[in-house]
Image (cartoon, rainbow, N blue to C red; front, side):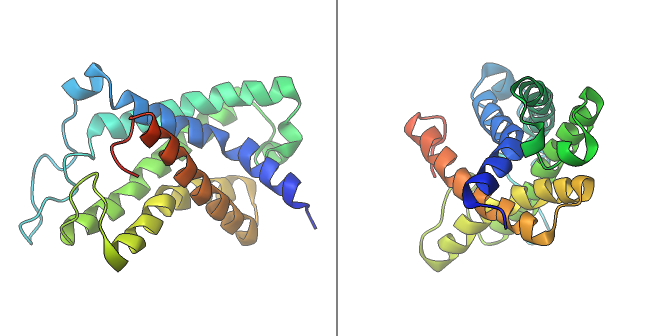
Length: 198
């Protein structure tokens, strides 16, 4: 059985580009370029219930930048792993090697999965009248707090599972560690005034 320390190291070495992509994209959304081109993905349209489909915070430029920044992060991280000798710790590299072509493909798919898997959560939130970028109190708020931490990770690590063949147990470990990391990163971004709420 893998020791907890080695398990956590492997998860972070493999998942670091997703963290880098998420933080990088959050910072990008504060730039004038983003603000200038932040057209909502739903075009301001409403669903048959009269409520917005996704809301103003789901934008085409944010969707695209998440994909691009994650892909760039994966390319950079692949080079770091190569230089540091960390390939053996990386669940994908152990199976498929560490190459620029693989990193580009995996980075693009990871970023795409991250962005796509946030959309159903936003759709449901609009149905229950939770405003974009806001949190809810009570039991409903607790449910969505958990979903907010894992929605994108479910897709990202499914891509990893498909490409590397990790077990479902390992997949679940990625989700658990990833959710805890997501909370920690969001707290740091909140303290730095990059996020408006946790």
